[in-house]
View 1 (spheres, rainbow, N blue to C red):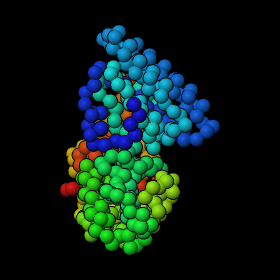
View 2 (view 1 turned 180 degrees about the horizontal axis):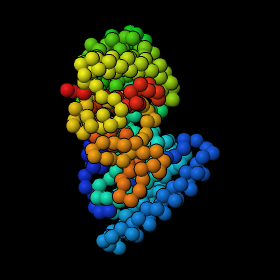
View 3 (view 1 turned 180 degrees about the vertical axis):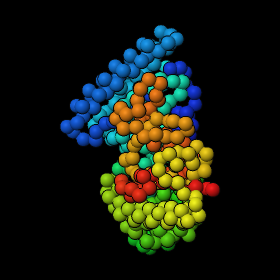
View 4 (view 1 turned 135 degrees about the horizontal axis):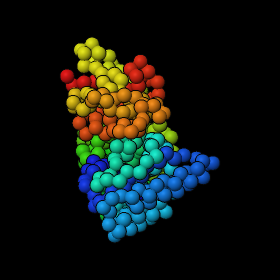
Length: 370
């Protein structure tokens, strides 16, 4: 199966103990040709490494080894390198497998355990900044699931929605799209239903919401309920209830950019205020300690910040290349992703910023609760 939508329920299920062995494979990939041939070779080598690890795994019985190899093989056969982003994650056990295309580079590794490796997945999802787009017209409402560079129409939770019609009214059909079409009670009731459905989705999957439609529709939708009152942005434009996704994504782009700029300004204001009241941490080691103590309220980290470290006396020591490696020395290649996952688990907000935005704070900073 290919699951590219990480919800709290999905993450909770992925983190439960699995039938041993649970195998996690990660590797960096390329978005475009001519590098897909390199990805093919790398994936073949990663598969060979997984086979070797399973053959050498002590105490693993033949039936379990055969079953998990079968699941991994089926997953690899399903990987479509034309769809890859910046990283690939394959999760497999004796019963099932998952494939994830990640908008974030991940290390090349094979992990055999009784749980799946999820920190790369969590960090990639946070970095992709998921959002919703609600597009409304007098006779149609569609909800779109956005993440990074992708936007897909949602066919769930009652969407797409249309008002009930007992009989077809050709005169009203001609009015749809005109401002007058938003005055009749049928349309008002329809938009109340849209508001309720949207509120239900936001309650279970909170993320920024962008609303699109003609000005009369947006005004009436606000009057219908409260789901759109806190919208991250509005685009006053009709004819987009049906998309297509590529056009809707392009049209909503400037609205999203404006929201991101506002959020960044607010974040830097928070960081400056935290410095003044001594509730501020900067640099990997300080932020890591605040996350471990669950004191971090907001984490700001640059998009492509990665750092290998070794842990020495409870502190993180950066490792470059093969420096610091040796017998008995454990080096963690993806400590930033692990920090992001731990921060989210501790209830902190994590915000990714453009590279060099935190150059003066060693590329990562935090607002502390105390």
